[in-house]
Image (cartoon, rainbow, N blue to C red):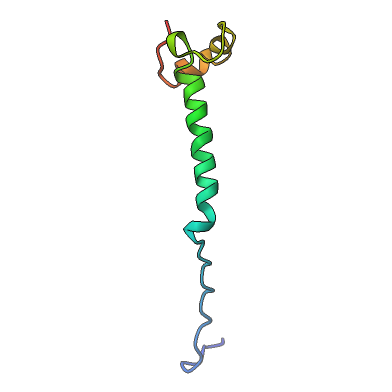
Length: 73
């Protein structure tokens, strides 16, 4: 049996690195922009707000619209 000597300190855990907000802000804004664009095309792209002519885009994202709870007909 071995016993730890009371004068010997246990090793401390390494400090976690910090990430400055200035460094991740562009990535967060780009990701947010992609989410807003995807939300538009899945949820709003039809009828009076349509940027793309025809119904091809609507039919392409049709099942996704219903999965996310958007009514479309």
